[in-house]
Length: 397
Ligand SMILES: [Zn+2]
Image (cartoon, rainbow, N blue to C red):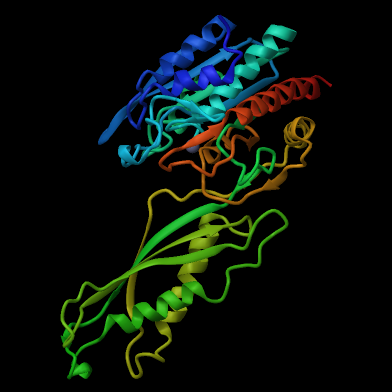
C-alpha cells in the first residue's frame, strides 16, 4: 500500500488527537506511510527541565546529495469548544467536498500532500536522484523548546547536511497559489518599568508620578517610525501591548508603572542593533522633563524577552524558482514572494540551509471548524510533486 492519496493520508493524521504535547499516534501513522517508500525513520524524544517531553520524527530516503528537506509539525492547537464544531474535530469527516478537522490546514494537510507527492513521484519516476528528508516536530504550537531546534541539532550532529528546505505551513491568504514565504520578520519583546515615588494626589511635589514617565517612554517607542520598509519587507512596527499601574485609588500617586511592547522588524535591523536603538530612544525620553518640569531624569529599567526571533531572507534562486514555477504550472497563478505574517520554525532552519514556505490556505487555522477543500489537497500534492522533480532537475544541472 502506498500513500499516494492525500485525502486518506490527511484523514489518518487528523484521527490522531495530537494536541501539543501529545504525540497522539500521528508520528506512528506518518512512519507507516514513509517506511514502505524506503525511508529510514528515527523517532527522537527531546526533553528539558520544566517542559513536557516531546516526540519528534526524522526520516530520510537516499544516501547521496543533493539533499532536500521538508519540515513541519504534527502537533495541533486545542479544539476549543467541541460543541461549536459542525463536525467532530478528530473525525476527519468530508461534507460537500470539504474535509473538517483540527490540523486540516495547520499543518497535517501539508504533510499529507507532501507524502502523497513523494509516493507518486517514486511510483512514476523511481527514487529521487539524491536524498529527501522529513523533519517533523511535535512541538511547534507549544513552547517550541523540544522541537525543531533540538531535532535539527540532533540530525546535524549525526552528519546530516541539507541543501534546501521547504516548510509546509499554510502560507496562502485566500487561494492556493497566492503566496510563497521567502523570509520572515524578526520579533522582539520587552517590559519597561518606571519607578516613581508614591504619595497623595493633592501633594504631588512630595511624590513622583511614574505614569507621566511611562507615557513619555511609550510615546518615544511608537514615534517616529523605525524605518520605511525595504524591497522585501514591510516597515518595522512596534506595538505597546499593555500599560499597567494596578492602582485602585484615585487619590494616590502610584509607586511604579510598567509597559510591555513587541516589535516586528525587517532586515534594516538585527535584534542587537534594534535593542540599541530602543535604549537610545528610552534614554533620550527619560532625560526630557517636559511632563515633569524641574525633576531629575526619570528612572526606568527594561527587561527583554528571553528569545528574540531573528529576521531572515532567503536568496537561493534555484529553490525559489523551482517552487514558484511549480505553483504557476499547476495553478496558473504567479505566487507573491512575501515576508509578511508571524514567525515560524523556518527561523531555526535558516541557520542550516536556505528555506522557503508554501502550504494550504490559512483562513481557518486555529479556529473551530478548521477545514480544507478536498480539491486543494489534490492541487497542493501536484504542486509539491512538480516542485520536488524540478528542484532535483535544477540541482542536477
Ligand atoms: Zn503550523
